[in-house]
Length: 136
Length: 178
Image (cartoon, rainbow over all chains, first blue to last red; front, top):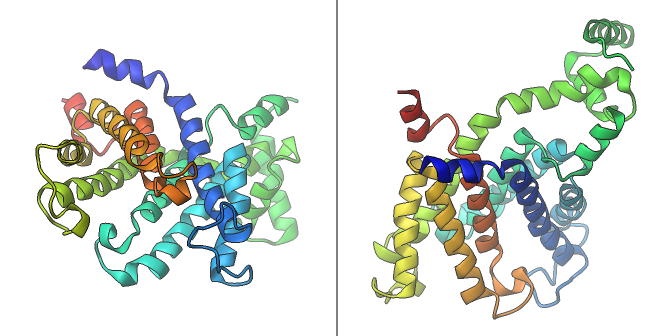
């Protein structure tokens, strides 16, 4: 068991970057669906750009993009974490207490993933790391 | 450039007194100028990052506990019937979905308390990948349309947790200490 743990632990920094990229991509797709209406046929077809949903879409589009690139990862993840907590309490929580029934499981997962990423940073595969290397 | 923490600190203090701004405002300024000036490197880069980075191990434990709670919910809905989800009402325990529920229930419980975290997370990540490709991917390429966003999120969260371990608030950590 110990050997297996160590084998897995060797991949931690790279996996953190992959985790960040996937979280960013998933957020980005919500932003794209809300504002650019792609892919067509989602539940966000009727979202207005200048509404609460539109503002959320804007955050997801821009900050999700930055999270994919890994630029200002900590700050960006921190803001997204707040946005997702807000989304959960405004949109899902009034429907019921249990996340599985109010549909807020994804919001909770993304919220805590972003909270963790804001603490741990973007990992080695990020623009942050590249810039840090250049400026010394 | 030679890195002199004491000089940087003194410079930061002087600037703060000249501009008459609070520590909080200084923090914002420092974060904004992070990439512009290397003189700011110590306080600019790091006040926010340092505070956040210090919390990384605990945040890892929090992420693990939340992810475990979320996944055990699916297992409970499938096998115990609480919370009751109509789609799982007629589920047979000895079917593929029943097996998935078993993995989620047992794995989720292990992940919450943080026992054998790494292997448990690895198994759950694998299960989620199978779930995505079996029940979501055939519907559409886009996760938003095939409803598989949550499965992807689970898959990668648990894959990450399987490499990062359980963090300080866990049975694993308590056992290692003894």
